[in-house]
Length: 314
Picture 1 (cartoon, rainbow, N blue to C red):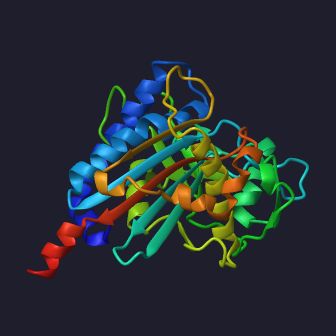
Picture 2: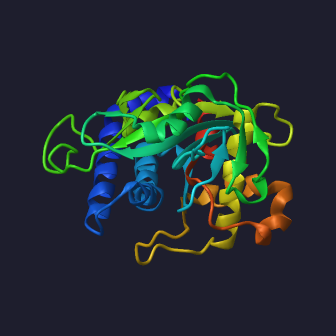
Picture 3: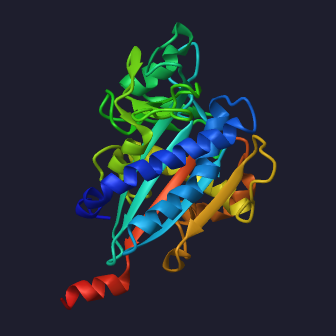
């Protein structure tokens, strides 16, 4: 999507996404006393259907595909500290597909934390996670299936918009369930000793679609020399193995198991970026450990061909 179309509809889009996020929080709260994994599961299963419907309604000139894969056990990495951090809890990926076949890719990796305030001081016991997102030391994959032992060296060695913290307010008096304009249940923060919300998650997702937030990554996982791009493709590939095994899965009882959901318009019913992530690894599907992976929400869009033709003949 182009930024003009998003900017023109942002006043409609943001409150709709905010309501969908709030509905997601209400939904999961009615089922359990949620912890971080429960909120992540709700985002990657319940929220994506509403998100898809919003995108289709607000942008009728585009085709969309929205996929969600929930993974309970996340990969960890070795950064030569006493404790090994997780890579993240949930990865949002946006794919802007052009009619000429070109793809522009954006990514947002989030580490979720429950907080009663719009700020949170990082506890000493969790500083290994902060070290990863602040300084990006070279790391080695652990608990990541076939990737175990592989190294990645992200540059530059500093914070970036592609890796942030997600603060989740579980208090119904302040997260917007019972009140208030300006209240929201989830917000994003750059990595720091004291996490402070910069934007609501709804705003961050809109900026991801505009490439104003997040971090872009290369479209070819085999030729890229950028280790951020390699890492994102690594995470997508792990999830793609689960997606391949569980294509027809649906969320029944709310359990912390792997789940896959996919919604798309007719012209986007073909392969997704998850299919492309498998690539030359298709024969390894049965060898992959299903118990690891970062949950993923994948949004793909493409300008409708008939709309493009109308624009040409104006």
